[in-house]
Length: 366
Ligand code: F0G
Image 1: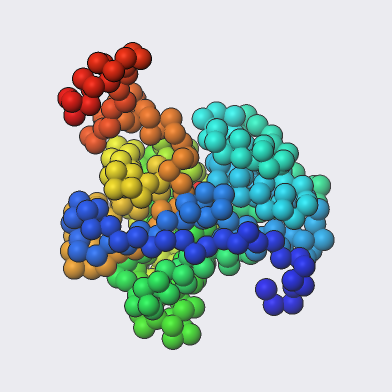
Image 2: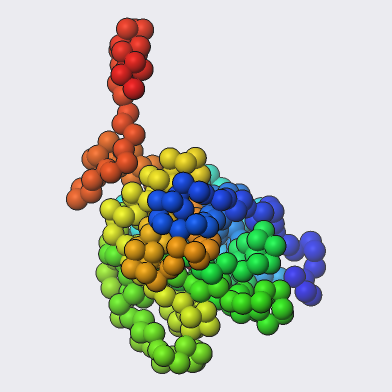
């Protein structure tokens, strides 16, 4: 932080997450080289901490005493934790339907002012901006540029872990498109600085029921043309089991388009079925992630099948959040109780009375 007094910096610290090799998952999607960077290993369980350190530090530098966000879950926990550490008030606008309960519990526990509002994420983001402007509150959703500057470190760290040998592809889930935007900026800056000798292509993966980028983005042959404002977003009403990315009107759309043009990127969508099956695979090799994060693997698989990603190309997939998010989806999947979904890779829960015979019978059956 140039020009910011050390005493103002709020950090836990974040980052230093693992970059896993995953040969079994590579085989499942049909490529030779797959790495998964696990951002769920950050202090509050998601990549949000990467940017929240910068955002809350900037709030303090500006003398703000209140910070706010709308959230599908992870941002709320991160904001609440960093605000608590900084000794300022955190405020979270939650939706009141299908709330990510574990995340609400984190925000409540860290002492944030939590408001459940009868509106979806997209409306809550409008509301938090309006209310914050009236009351002089600092908004820390990913429209905040200091957040995105922090999220660039995911890419910088990944390249360092790969000894500055850029992979062919970066595959990332897309919701509000903050990560996609930050990644494009980080990669092009690293390339300009000579830290990497080529720019990996970004693949942004959305859930089919929340894919406004996929339906709005049109690649142009002149992929170097990334001026803002020439592409139009068609917002949608979002619906997906991947709670984190249930977003129909992403605020970072223009920046994400820029990132796509800078990196010769692609966009793709995957169904909830594909998301949950990919998640089951990631979980079953002991890495684990939340549903939204599994877009990275599900999207890689789909892009390999359609020939966009070639078997010999290397892929870094970003796992954005922790396995403990959305436990209902995980348990529902493995017990095959999810509406319109089938558990293709189930691990069924067993029931037994409190005697050895029944338990032994179960274990002998396996
Ligand atoms: N993955 C996870 C686990 C997330 O929590 C989010 C966003 C995304 C992906 C999408 O990232 O917005 O940069 O495209 N979660 C926000 C929240 C909206 O409130 O926690 P993006």
